Every structure is written in structure tokens, then in C-alpha cells.
Image 1 (spheres, rainbow, N blue to C red):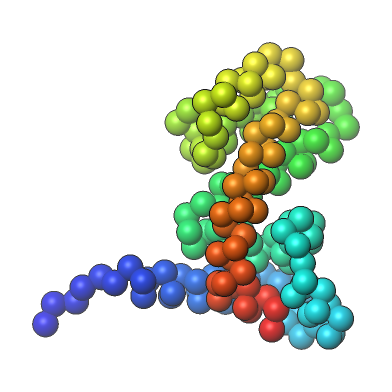
Image 2 (cartoon, rainbow, N blue to C red; image 1 turned 180 degrees about the horizontal axis):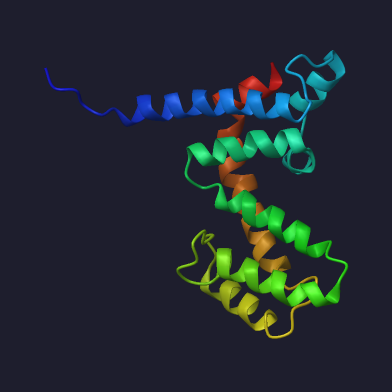
Length: 164
């Protein structure tokens, strides 16, 4: 009898494996699987914004996006957040170039899904990078994750593990 690859089963296994990795990462970070009731209730009521504001939520969401092969979205969002908090003007250009080359330019290794107009505006912003040069692109990716990925995340095994 020939074994056939079943994509649904593979996805389920990846989600379960991701859930296991999440537990391990949370334990390494000092966040126990056993949390008090208030924290559990907080996690159950997190908005998308609150999810991204907490390391535990970021970790779970990143694990989920990895199972969907789209973790570049949250990586880009977080890189933009880090960039926006850059204090040194000397580092702005090099950080901006790194983000642009990794996520925004065509054929970038972790290219995010941006429309042509947003990509063009972001390229123009790169001529003289400011703390806000990625705002439009980041906003587009945030909306994509919130409207597309987040609802699927709420139904995932990774999320169920996070709230139990």
C-alpha cells in the first residue's frame, strides 16, 4: 500500500508541533504554562493590538504564522516597531536599508505582500529615512494580519493552547 501525503494532516501536525514549541519558549522566557485566572482571562480577551503588545502573544502568533508560512508579516511589523524606537539618527539609514532589503524590495528574502503603490512610496521614503518612513507599509501589513490571519489564529490549536 502506497503512503499518500495528506496536507490537512501535515498542517495539523505542524500546528501541534508549533504549540509544543510555544510551551517550551514560554517556559524558557520564565512564563509558566500555569498562569493565574486573571492572566488567563486577559489572554482570552486580547484584541489583535493587545496580542502584539505582549511577548507571549507575539510568540504564539508568530508560531501560528510559521505554520502558515507567513511569519514574515509579523517579523516585518516588529522590525518596524523596533525601527520607530531608534534613538540614534546614525543608525536610522542602516536599519531602514536592512528592513527594506529584507522585507519590502521585490525579491526580498522575506518579502511581504504590499501593493505596487505602497512599495513605491516606501522606496521614495528611503531616499531620506525618517522614523515614519515605513508607517504606510506597516499599516498595510497590520491590517492584512488583523483581517486575514488573526481570525484564523483564533480558531487554531496554537491559540487554544495559549488560552488554556
